[in-house]
Image (cartoon, rainbow, N blue to C red; front, side, top):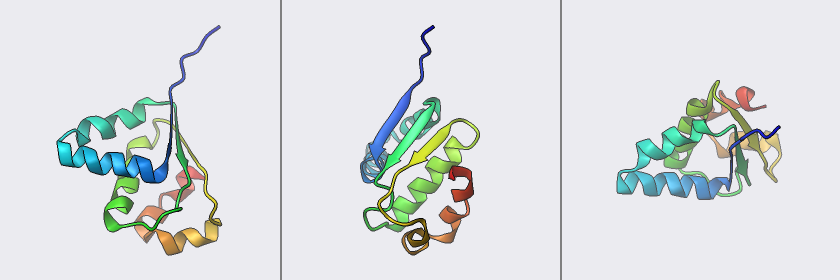
Length: 99
């Protein structure tokens, strides 16, 4: 039996760059609403690059869009304890959903 299971796997910085570009070209709503349609979202190299307030907001929106619609798998070379240095409290409050 074949099951269609859509997966999006991107380095986190690339996904955030795509979201930023989609804001600039007017396709943001279409892009952000396509994210919950996949069964699994893989955020690779999470926290590898310095976060800006805009990128933290994008991550927050991704997590909100994914809530109860699909799984998120996060890979990072940073210890979980370091994440508080990288991200703000609003984003960190959603991390138990990811863990």
